[in-house]
Image (cartoon, rainbow, N blue to C red; front, side, top):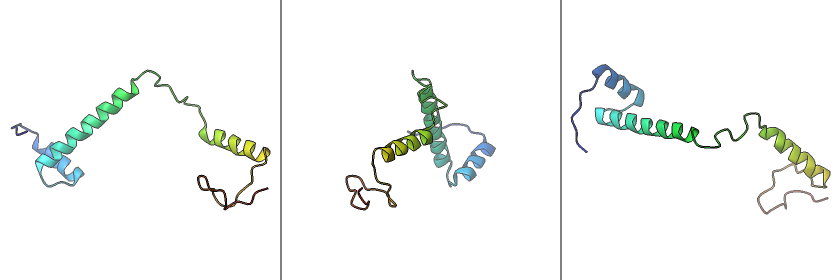
Length: 93
């Protein structure tokens, strides 16, 4: 779409430098895209259930607990990470 607008030259120049672009058109397009992304992200935060996951949720703790349970149930402790559906790299107990 072609349009004529009046822009602050200093602001446009700074935007062009920060974005590493050569034309005003590129600077304006990048600015518009970034605005849209930020506003969509802001809308996402207002969705119901935004408090999930719980801020005190500790994924590392959960994973450590899962590893401990696996060892307690006889899972082998592999020196190499297992591949999906391929446990041939591990010694089986």
